[in-house]
Structure formats: C-alpha cells, structure tokens
Image 1 (cartoon, chains in turn brown, purple):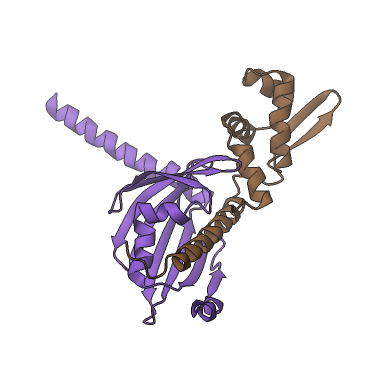
Image 2: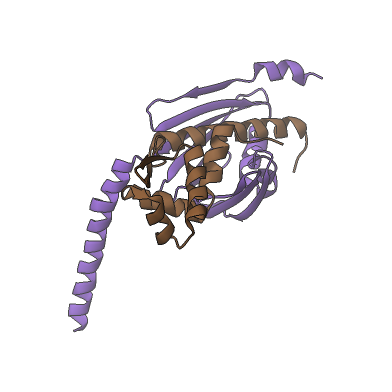
Length: 112
Length: 163
C-alpha cells in the first residue's frame, strides 16, 4: 500500500480533525493562549493541549510559554502559505500518476 | 516481455514555470483512447486516483460544468476532493477545478492535454494553476462585491418597476 510521505502525512492528519481546523482558523486571526482556546472550543485544558501538540508536530503551530501562560500561534509552516499546499499537491499528483502508470501497464491490451 | 525496454524510456518531466504553476509531462505506454478512458471512466479512475488507498467516487459528471467528488480513505484519515469540469474534449483535453476539503477556498485549475505519440504511447501534459491568496482576496473584495452590488442594483430596479 502506498503511504503518504511522512511530512504530508502529519499535516493531513493534523487538519483532518474539525477542531484542529477550527484552531487554525482561530489562530489565523491572532495568537491565543491554550486556556483561551480550551474555553472557546468547550474543551478541557488537557484535551486542547493534545490538539495543539498534534498541530505543533505537523509544524503548523508553534507555542511559547511566558510565565504561566502558553501562547499558540501559526507557523512555522503556514497552511495559508500557498507553497506548502502546492508542495503537498505536487507529491499527491506524482504518486497518482505513478499509480496510473502501473495500472496501464497491468491492464495493457485490455479494452473496457 | 517487450515492455521492460519501453518502461526504461518512460519520461517524466516536472517544471515550475511560476511559483504557482506546476507542469508535469508523463509518457504512458498506452494508446490515447485508453489513457483518456483512465481519466474519465469512474470504474478506471477508482483503480489509480487513490494512490493505492480506497477511493469512493461520490460524483463524476464528465461534462462541462459537471461536478466531481472523490473521497480517499488513507491510513491517516478520510480526505475529500472535488471540483467542476470546465472543458471535456475527448480524447484530447480535460480541464477541471480541484479543491481539497482540508483547504476550503483554495481552488486550483488542472488542465490535462493528451498527445498521441503515434507509437502506441501517449504523452499527458498536466498543468495546474494555483490562485494566490492575494488574487483570491482581491476577487472577494472587488469582483464578488462588484457582482453582488450589480445584482442588488438589478434587484432594486426590478422592485422599483414592480412597485
């Protein structure tokens, strides 16, 4: 089975969840503390920390702790950035065309 | 198998003429009609488009203005892709928009041109154009607003006439 490249995999996984997409949209409007986010999304602090961690692993969000407050912001890889999306798209297209090539070879001479 | 020599001749060329355009040329060892079919027949699309993942073709109306929607069930989750066919000219040219659920509003335009190489092979030239956020935002702020205003003006006139 063809797997996504790892980098793509993490970003896909990170944003396949509606809450995490919501967090990205929220952070697109400005930085927010984890507790603000937890309150806004009606979650426990622990639950929100987990979501933010997934986004952080995918490098879509960074966090910084100042005093007792941990603040989240977009980046370093900004999903709004076309280049990130174009890169992901290109990898997808390439693996798709590889599959097509295999398929056409496998079914050579067959007519529908 | 005579295909082994041909496989080594398979060409693939990727260029990025601008940072928002992707250009990929691939030569497939299959006649053009067959390649066209692989792009436009849902039963065949299901065999390759999902890159080895399960693919559910929810809609595929291969005609100008027709809607397509594919859902890929990958190891990391479910991803929906969709768009509309802009041009369907068998067996030469297929143009459609492409949008991924994960990035709503980021619409790319994909053009595939199928060239018969005359030796049983087919070259597929795939060009994808991405709209920049500046353009998209510009469109939202100018074009759509203007369009809306025009619609409202027309509605105003209609209401005035009915008045």
